[in-house]
Image 1 (spheres, rainbow, N blue to C red):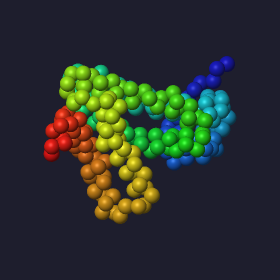
Image 2: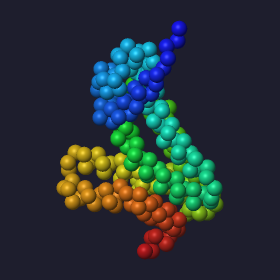
Image 3: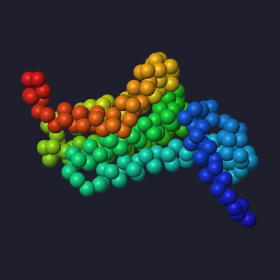
Length: 215
């Protein structure tokens, strides 16, 4: 007889979402996970078999939410540059929201955690390709200046995504004084701050290089 789910799998995945940014692959113990979810230890094995399988499902579920929102923005109506602007705004907000677990995945992969490395190998380029394709469209439509697409992509990511991924990690380490942290939240990490960086980056990419050199 098949046992009723009683949403136990969903409870475990929700607990995984909350614990993973703090624990990562290595330190997320089954005991801590099941206690947090209020679930019998044996039910974990019934639903997920083992920890690596659970982590793979957890990471993929979180990433698909990220990717599908981004994909919908890429496919929305508008010119390539308009869609690129909206997509980069969304990407900045999503990177801010998902940054804690994404950062943990990267650090786990750097330490050789197989689940994290397999996840990045499968998904690491999917969202990048969406943005690169938009950049290429905008260049072809002459909405951006003639530039190597990967050069434009890295410029955008450096301006938009890097601050919302790096700044929270630096603040969590206590390097920045309280006043600076407050300003970071109200400017760099805010929706308005993200939008300003997107506009400035796209302005720079739309301006012919010969004009920039004469400034």
